[in-house]
Length: 174
Image 1 (cartoon, one colour):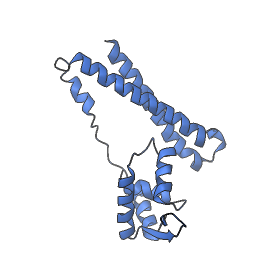
Image 2 (cartoon, rainbow, N blue to C red):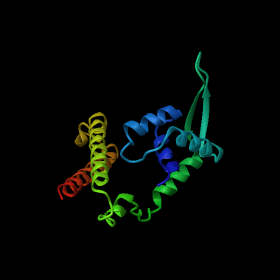
Image 3 (spheres, rainbow, N blue to C red):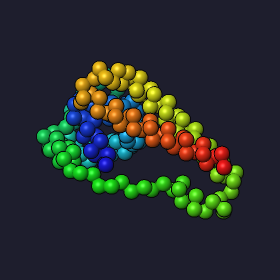
Image 4 (cartoon, rainbow, N blue to C red):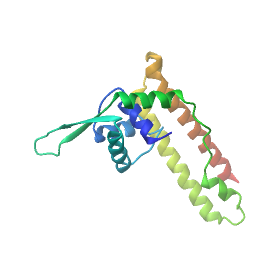
């Protein structure tokens, strides 16, 4: 998956500024994709140059002009092509797992600290998921299938995070 595809998805329904897109990432896509504001703005510029996006400059009094991005026909075609193409397998690249193959050399206090920090991070993620669910999917059965589809990804994220938390508990108990 590329940031470009995620940005096209984000802009397919509603045009938005870079700030709007950042907010959409924080509130609705946080469980799917992470990107810094620098990455987003850099990619928006590339997409505009490639003809995938149009940008309307909206003057504002006493503030910098707003740049409102919207998807073009070329952008829609690229999104459609990406959606139609099967995704290849995602490689598992988890540096933490490599440390388990050097268990005897991994200092116990460093191991405990790393796993405890990861556990706290995952618990924060579960709180973020709960906030997203409350804001966007408080009644998933009342949504249309199109509106409910992203909820399924949220549920998967919750379940995977729960599995990670249970796994960390098992490891910490040894």
